[in-house]
Image (cartoon, rainbow, N blue to C red):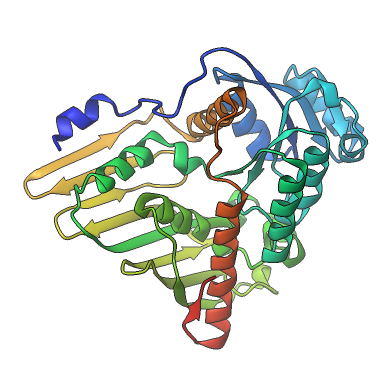
Length: 358
């Protein structure tokens, strides 16, 4: 494959079939990611519009709706009661992990499409219940893995599928951020075990490496061994202030590290028998793709394509699927496998054993 030929279609939306129609979104949970990233992304999209904001209080929902020129602001309880249900077609759930299920269930029972942030819930059992609810209500469910609609990642997958790296051999993933510098509150939900679920660093950061590797390799991990440690007092009750783990992708070995208490950095590298694909930085919203094979190499950097643009692609993809009644990926079963993997990572760290993944 010629890298020059491949570059010509770098930002093609190979998934898009709809060019007309609008999906109206209700945003559930109005933290900084929803207001600063998701709303601008939908505003910049071709097929989406934000029409309802949902928060814990009428005051906050109404105030933010007025600030962002959104037609309705309602509370969580009003959402469950069906308030403003005719004003939106789909929801985006961006609450703490342990609250995802109740709002997905409410939206499913109202007949709405659902984009749910990753990880899909705080435990495997609650994620399984979410899948069952959406199947029972025939509700379209997509887990918000924005890397899967990121053009750099999609092109990397094409290269791997075409044999550019030869036979994949190893994967290295890393994701870190200084959480307490970003949000200087030791009581925030990402540091609250009942809200985050299986720890914090793997649930919030390591999941990017896990899921993106699954997507690029088109295979799932089958076993894991891992180590974790916690020292900072703000991480009390959480096992993984920092974590390292090795995943067996049935013949491809992955080593990954993650921490919520480190310099911001992220990368994902897949090395094969004939070449290598590296994405660095990978996950904070400014993907840079580096590929090489023999004397061929390419470094591609798009500074104008950040987190908002990645989310725009994700929302337009979901709208395209709804408008054309097409299959949705990644769905609930896909997200459930990540939670089973994370549960196994924590079990392996606790027991010191190699743990199989269902």
